[in-house]
Length: 295
Image (cartoon, rainbow, N blue to C red; front, top):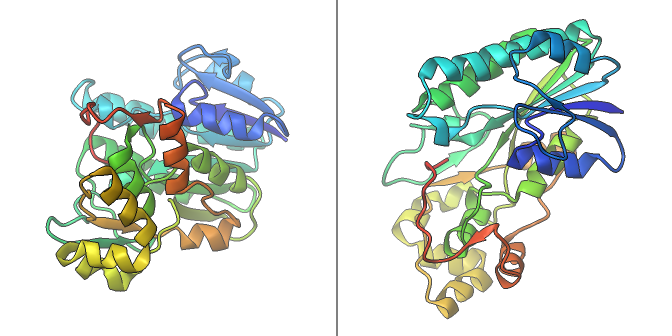
């Protein structure tokens, strides 16, 4: 399969490239150079995109302005890149005979659905309530793609959970309720290239959670009791290391992706401890404070 991958120089794009390149021809497109990128162009360059789409079977569109750009670039740029750029690429892909379009979205667009003082169960039935222009732009692009899907142009949307580097103290618990390894994000995109079913599908990609909807209330009032029952080994790890448990304010349910894509997160908290031991940049030192907006 020949796959056009946008955002191929970025963190998620590089991971997707790594998941696919051994079995497919991956044509990387990004405005920044990297060895995973064949075409260094802007998403608005119609001529370059049309040329890059020749002979392509599927598109994975991960290029975007992200949460850290909020406040640094004009809101109009989010619309130009995240909405108009997606629309242009999808129309060009459809005209070129591309049959599958996979779009990288985010669980951050649930926004105000996360209520302070509560733990919210999040799945594909949860109504997004965007907080920022980033969230709004990703949701607008999703809506346009849903309308554009057709029997000859199948669209898959992957709403990925939080996957950027943080301290192990945060990552360990996040991986149990609202986080995912970037390699698992890549594998979800790879699975979305082939699955059958309706012409438009949307999935949350998140780490496997030991929690259920019935745990939400007690995760706020008695978090240690719930952790002791559901995942005592990880509570013990926190206690052994003297870490403070982060607040569990949401749980991302990836069961629809497990069923619909035949995909499952493979890298849980044990992977974080291995990365910590290996001094991987995926796990930040404890002294580093969080600088990225909450996703």
